[in-house]
Image (cartoon, rainbow, N blue to C red; front, side, top):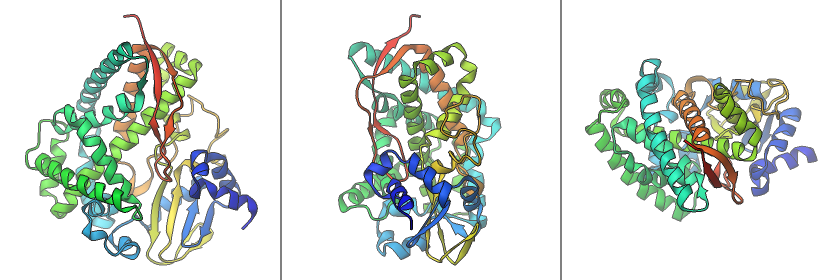
Length: 402
């Protein structure tokens, strides 16, 4: 293995590398887009990542995989959730359950989704404006980008949006155990959160509210999958949707707060906002890596991947592959190609259309409500391999004259 490739692996295996990974991703894409590293295979090229996501021989992490990694996984309710949802299924069972979960996001429900998105976005932006007028700075992550998608999902479920602050830390605790090697304290918190979220999901399923997700909830109650799978799928849908959208919104506003020219252009030409959101999703995807594993030896392009390998499909690297994108590191509002941010194939993100909608509505409304947005301190980032997002984003806001 050359020194260049060894250095590039820092993007995966060191804190410093994970903080600034794109140069390393580019080196791997250019020199070795499918790279075996022990029992793992790192995939970075766009064509190779796209093929991996559609490869029948590659499977999402499920109970069979978990049994090879951690013998006690089934004794932990948090791990039963993340390994027992629709995301861990393949074949007919996956297709049937995915069809149920996808119903709220069909075009026929777009108007109802828009109402919930506008209702919660408007409310939270007014609260943000009030906070910015009563204290010097706000934390955009804690004061808006985390609350907004959680409130929207609560609204869609027919649940009081005031439950959003309750949902966020519990769903965050669940997502931490996608890494099965988590420490004991993290696992204990996740298991406690899992018990509370299971009770929440049971209530929502047994008494569907009037929200646009009611059809999905009724479908989950009557689906052929077992009850635990339905509960896990609902929880994972919420966790993935809220985390992804939170990071997208934070990345978008950080970009606007550090690029006054872009912010002013979007104020003057709001029709460019969808292209802006698309380019944020491409250049700063909330999820950098999605994983697959091999039950038997599998060919991936020109490479052979052995049985039991974990395949790291690096979406963020694929999104900057020069074989797919001209000037891949240049932020362009006219590109309108978000790459593989939401995946591809049978596990394509169910809530992709809702995330885009929420991003467009929120960014347009924020630019209208605030005349200026300035970074007021050093943002902090989560040190994670898979999910990349801001933990805090201090902002100084000036409200626009109305």
